[in-house]
Image 1 (spheres, rainbow, N blue to C red):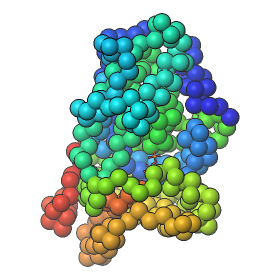
Image 2 (cartoon, rainbow, N blue to C red; image 1 turned 45 degrees about the vertical axis):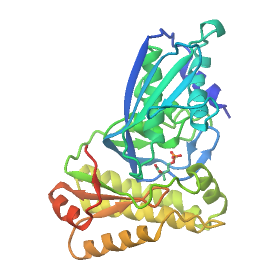
Image 3 (tube, rainbow, N blue to C red; image 1 turned 120 degrees about the horizontal axis):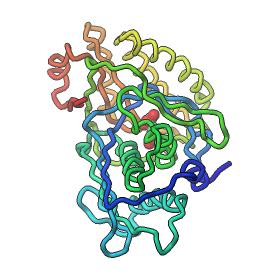
Length: 335
Ligand code: PMV
């Protein structure tokens, strides 16, 4: 089993860096239509199952890397300069070190960097910024060191920051392979060659508070204690087959029904853990009931929910006015 540093070195060895003055990259956030929940290797963030997502267009992270004028690594998040020991800054610098170390930057020649990262995801939109954050950082590092890495390599590296970041390297529908290699070299993402402009995503914020249990801890608890987790890999396999058919045939009902039942099954698995893991708020439950009622009344609308209380609605462009009337607080994702 590799360490993160060894994994990064495997990919970066053989690349000769040429350092630029400055590099900027953007990555979109994404939501999984078939979720990733559970790691087969927690050190390398390798997932138990494949997953499939769609990007959130203009919502995401822009990251700039440049030389630090004062010779000190600095992280600026949404305009605020972070303390050296701030947990986010430490995470970012550790990630940058995977590149600096693998690229053999001799101490004297090791550039001190300023990393400026801005999330345009509206605060409290209930969309994780770690996926777009680590994807943008990976792309910016690739450009800063003039590495010219392929998309697959970028997705393998972004995964070291967060599992969902691997998918944010690409736009559109993205398929993440769990892979079986113990070293994780086959655990990459790739874009699917399909577009579906009529498919719309609406975000409903129930709570803007940080989640009570991180996805890392939540996954560990679910895998270790939930009796329902045994069935999860099979559910994902069957949902992925349906989702791929739905995307290919532009079958919205199949896409929506599959995404919704996959998300609800993930949350059931979590609630069966010890102690139970419940990310929902009462308002989450109320929105689920409302969506299911509207659907019974003939409005084709579905939902998906990540590790938090916030709801993402899935509908077709033709129904946007009706969906907006029912959910006036919804933010429409601009894709
Ligand atoms: O990438 P992480 O560690 O934040 O985990 C993502 C977990 C879910 O958002 C719930 C599902 C997914 O596939 O994105």
